[in-house]
Length: 88
Image (cartoon, rainbow, N blue to C red; front, top):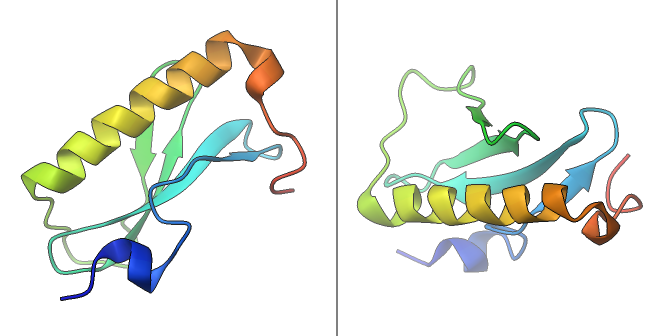
């Protein structure tokens, strides 16, 4: 199976969304389904699952989610790092 970055070069990268005032990212589950994730200012993560009956997260995906959550938290702490022009 190709790595997720081959399927989507933006996978695993945080993009700030002004509308939701959160960071977004796409993480792939064990079956290579793209999972949209929103990282909130209060150190929480919202995973959009309405398009799926279930998601299957392996260790790699879980570690990636924790890493992205930590990175988003750091960015929220230092608001100068927020890139407002990334996504409307």
